[in-house]
Image: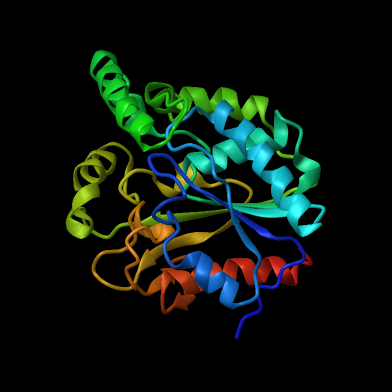
Length: 272
């Protein structure tokens, strides 16, 4: 059995649209990692707040985790926009000395070409943003800003973001990409998958591998079944058992949770 007893605790940082509670954003992953010896905590930031606000919230959560565990640092695993928030935390908020590693799961480090197209429909996107903010306020967000989140996913914003948030040499950066196999693999992601396919190639329904690569590229993963892996599947939002293949290395996993066990066990092997 792989050992996930890392030197530093694991902080799981969720992406846009959901919160850590009351339904766990990360599905079965935290329970499985803990069963393999890992100390696991959640980022606890808001669902649809801006990168800046959520990064400020992550500072407070980071301080609590370090105080509770007595650790000097944490290993962060972040999905989607959560990776941007963690990079802002590290670089702009000067918390790099408290972060041992950052593993990003489909984070739009290079921006989304699909979002660039959508943002040309500015009035519609603003309307969608306002409507979504109402629901997020009901769901517990204090300062939802969905339209700002949309802006922060564009290639132009991320170009400026990357210039302002260079990597910290004290932090080990890794990234993972994912692919659906067909437009019908995930009915929720079907329409965006087709749009991205026509515009920029195969994706997880939202982001292509070239848009999410940053630091040490750990591979492009897909499911062994007909579906592949969608943007929802890769964080185990559906709690759906699915075999996974690393297309770059050929390594296979019985389930998405086993892939996370591998990612964490690698950190332990590196002394993190």
